[in-house]
Length: 327
Image 1 (tube, rainbow, N blue to C red):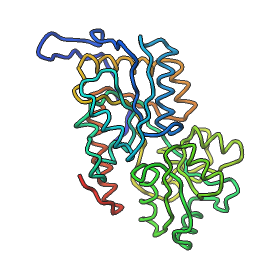
Image 2 (image 1 turned 60 degrees about the vertical axis):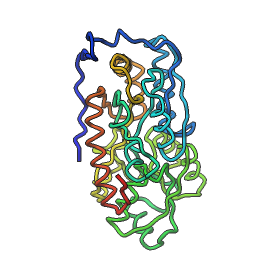
Image 3 (image 1 turned 90 degrees about the vertical axis):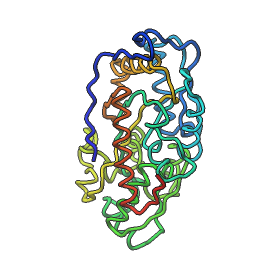
Image 4 (image 1 turned 45 degrees about the vertical axis):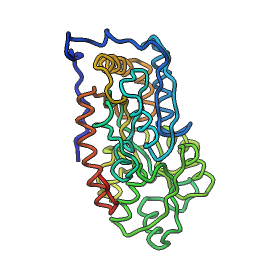
């Protein structure tokens, strides 16, 4: 599995494109910038994009506002295709997650490669997750749930995002390892997935810590395991997947920023610098702490290399669970 170290940042590299060197100072956005997200309002990447836009505005880091543009559909396919249709547009960016790598591997219609066809700008965070049930659930541990799913094949249900999301990949790997079987129901937004669990329509969810911990504290959810390399400080009694006895491949959720194809080098450098400034702000540090993210900033070249390597990891994970890989 690809090592997930925090990338070392350095000075902005001067870029030469058939002429004199340019730096981020040679480009500044002159109109509202769109942040394209692949989920609906309330989804994880929508909330991340809105938080990022708010911090840029609050810290007065850019001369223009950033607007969140929701492009749900086909997992990430609609959003990535929209971004790909804006070559060289320095006022349109996208918020990517793992599905921007996974979808092109399993969907013929998802033709846009994030690291080949688009312009990676920055990796921002690594996001852990919680495997959770309702607080009144009879399942006290993840092994309890898996044993029940083995005995009651296809009767238990899990809510989640796209079928190519980390949620479903974790499900597939655990089912293959254990012989258990439970259903997966996709919802377009995180709030709908959570509502399905709280309402008793499903039995399990892989939930973001920012949502899950609040629900645990209020006595509505119980965490069975953590999708992380080490336990979160606020959930010291909840084991990681490996500690719970499930030695499956690591599936870190990555969030970052990507641009359209052919984004000018000075625009790339500007946005690299802008996003690095965001990560140095007090509001960002507070946001990362409150949402239990792992800081993982990396600039364009580093992020492109990382995405290419991680895509290979995901391809092998999909093959391992028997998914049809088309690329």
